[in-house]
Length: 155
Image (tube, rainbow, N blue to C red):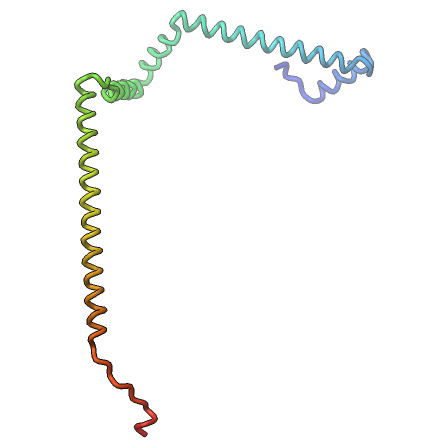
């Protein structure tokens, strides 16, 4: 704020130590800190008041107009975004809202039917796989067992 470097602060501290004395130096620094806090608060309040006055005077509208004039591409994109936002923001009681509700219900019915069809298909496949497994097990049980031959008996 005051653009003081370390050397300047050191000189100020030494002078304050000599003039005020080591006993009263903490009190002096505390008071300087309070003053700086009050000054910052006043500066913040002044800045806020100036911004509010500028808003009331329409400075933001003028800034927007100037921005639009200097950068027409961004302003056109802002217009497109606003139009898209207005098209997607609809009231539930309007015709668009009713149509959206009907489409949402139809979508839910389609999803439910698709899920049911998938479950039925998987059940059918599982039953078919179980039937094939039983047939294979039955065929294995019916095969005649070949007599076990020992290699040492042949020799």
